[in-house]
Image (tube, rainbow, N blue to C red; front, side):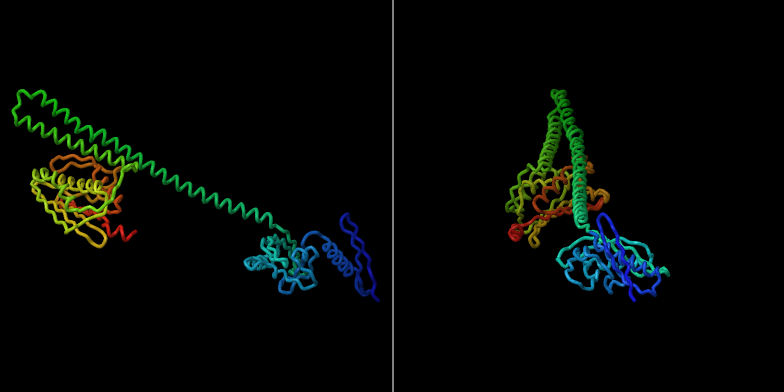
Length: 421
């Protein structure tokens, strides 16, 4: 004969009446276990929290889940519920690994993952899972409580994205500040060099001019014509050096402030070279230098004439300065493809290997004396490189100490500009 136990649990929020059949042959302990299991499940059914019980093997479905869980997952009819069916595909491996860990360590775990409900919602959940054991200590099931953490997770993702954007912004600003700091250091070095040139290179020729004029004034009445002529030549030479230096300084400052105007046009290089070499013939003659010029017919470049003239003039004056008496300087101009190449070669003293890398760097450059004691400011090749690059050209230098130097300029022809357009 089946008997019935009646049990009533009274609570402020939950009131459950449980009816449990039992056999007279069952002992009281078994009956109480049935009662408590039924009471617990009845209580959980009313709880406004998603709760469930599952076997260790998820493929067998849930043993129990309360109504809140069904509503949460959008389950509208009685069916076997497989919780892993709702787990987002990208999180399935994570859930499986965490459950395997729980079974191994036999301790509760918390898993954060996404679920896709039957209502087509994507929800972030925190699943707090506790293993249940039999009398032998083996895990026979586990109970889980699911908490909707979508809002907090979205807030966390927004904060993460914000932090990443902030981090990226800081990195970009740091990079910009690093570049700015580098530019400031470069500018400061250039400023120091600029003042060094003014203080030393510009003052020296002016001091020489003052000394020459003092001597000339003092001895003008007792000096013969030859002495006066010699003094005037020295004054003239010093004046030219000062003028050249001041022009270079002015041009360099205009380049740094981008105030120099570039007017690109077709340049006939044979005429340009002739106009540059002509005023230098006296210097070439005085040092008994053999000058060779070889220009391909109708050689031309598409560039700003003034800047190219200054660049070639600076290279030639350097070649004359550092070529000993009886040396040789050659100018070779030829076209190849869409570029014209201007090669200036000398048999001078050359450049030390350790100085070549910094030859175009004003901040580390030091001027050297020529073979006849000629002075320089160290600005010539710096200006040359900047001018050539502003004309979309390149400059290359090869040198061997005590054997000479070859400087090659490459400038685009009009054909190059047209093809680029």
